[in-house]
Image 1 (cartoon, rainbow, N blue to C red):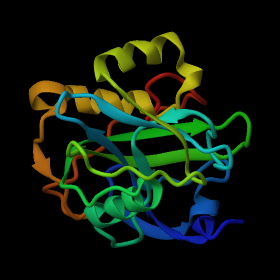
Image 2 (image 1 turned 60 degrees about the vertical axis):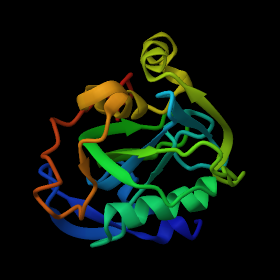
Image 3 (image 1 turned 180 degrees about the vertical axis):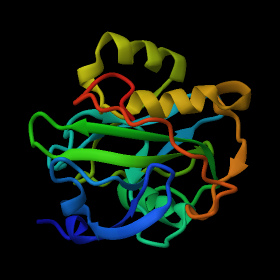
Amino acid sequence: MTTREKHLVELVDEAGRPRGETTVSAAHQPPGQLHRAFSVLLVDPGGRVLLQRRAPVKTRFPLRWANSCCGHPGPGESLVEAANRRLREELGAGPVELTEVGVYVYHAEDPTTGRVEFEYDHVLRGDFRPGAPLLPDPDEVAELRWVDPAALAADLDADPHAYAPWLGGVVDQLLRAPGPAGSPTSPAGNPTDPATTPAGPATDDAAERPGGR
């Protein structure tokens, strides 16, 4: 078990209220335990979003294309602090100002590893400054590419198994946010603050489908 698999995550109910904690490893064993997570989408001045292809050593959905960065805040940890920590660890990027554009509750089982994602996922948008460094960790990231989010949404329908099952839902939250390609709405805050944490929609119980996160 890797060190990160031993880290603690915050268990929540379907309204995002804390109800305990467990390890990353335990939370992702079948049938999965609903826990708090975040997905970051870095957006460049032209509106393109940064995707990463997950490294082959990942325990869940390796070698699938996903959003810029994912992770779990520790119990009581702010989303901004946790997300910027993972941006630094995975991409050598940040810190960046992050805005929460939505929350998505999803459930997906990895058909290869048998691990389960069951997450109350805060979708965070960050503006990427031209010329800012990107130094991806090869143990985390296999490849990077910039894509137009509308074109990505179409490709998710055409070739869903090339992507992590949560990516469709993440992109949908970005595209539904007010303004072009999800312009900022409100700053990301403490995940337990009801003013910045909308209730998640109904859980997707399909094992895997486009738009699963």
